[in-house]
Length: 402
Ligand code: EZ4
Ligand code: CO
Picture 1 (tube, rainbow, N blue to C red):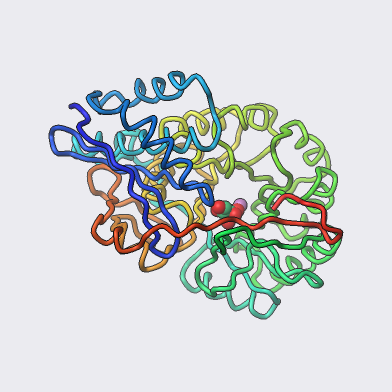
Picture 2 (tube, protein in one colour):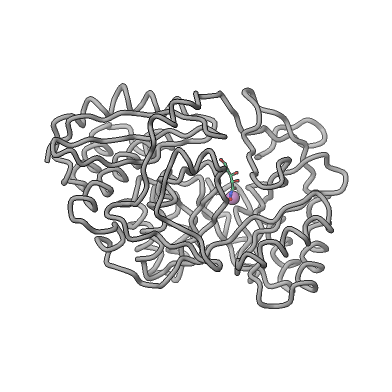
């Protein structure tokens, strides 16, 4: 079954998405997400200039072989642009394989290991009263797990607190906006928030928090310790993770579980974190970690070391990525949690999908393949708009991790 065409579709139905569509001689086609927030056009160029010409004429059924061909064949390994491009190809080929087999992709991955995929939503507000009503809203919708982000007194803005009530979008301008950060203000405030939230909602609701790479290991250790009484499901991205051994220090001091991985591209980014049992949840994704094929390799390694999955599912991961993630989530033994930020109605319209939410769970649906598509006519109505993620500075002007 030869590949006869591959196209990169860029569309901005509320936010930018890059989608790869691979067509075969039999007429069956597959789709893959290739969105890298704030760096979209780098992946578009990598795909159109370098990958697509190499796909034409190849056998679409040889997923593993094509993965190795694109990874080893480039000579230059790893990195977000390369791995996002490979992920898009891999995802589209799994979609094709499922359609040809007449089976949803999760069946090809071993079948269902659970009934539904437990998801967590994003409750956020600048102040405490707003936060409580956001959390209640999620609980009323049936969510069993909620991520909590809140404003920090003395800071005009911070990561995770939306301007739009429903749809948080950090890539908020063509050129980066700038935020101001204070670790001291943050560390003093956050435990008081969780103390009140836990008191209000009782022991059953799972509570999560995203530190978004802003602390040093010893600061993260202090935060984890101070949050222990409030029983967090995880503390996410406590420190930038280039230094994997840095997590040892956090681990020595706190039993608050640690989740990391949304910016990881390969198994080599988390190999030490997993094998030394320095984390509890690995949050790598289909789109940024080499597709279904490579993500499964990461999750399999994690399973040996009691590390569970916790895949990233922010709005910049398109419905194509979400669909692929759900087929993986429902079929692996060591599933933990799936992030689920709702897409805008425009996005859902451009990407019709079979997955659906019910009572705190997502279900991948029973369509052959991934059960997601791109409506190219509708996509064409939303042209690309440059958008960048913010840059963060300390109060004295020093550039800090965002
Ligand atoms: O900042 O997806 O857990 N979710 C996150 C996200 C990321 C964005 C970056 O593109 O940290 O909100
Ligand atoms: Co995050």
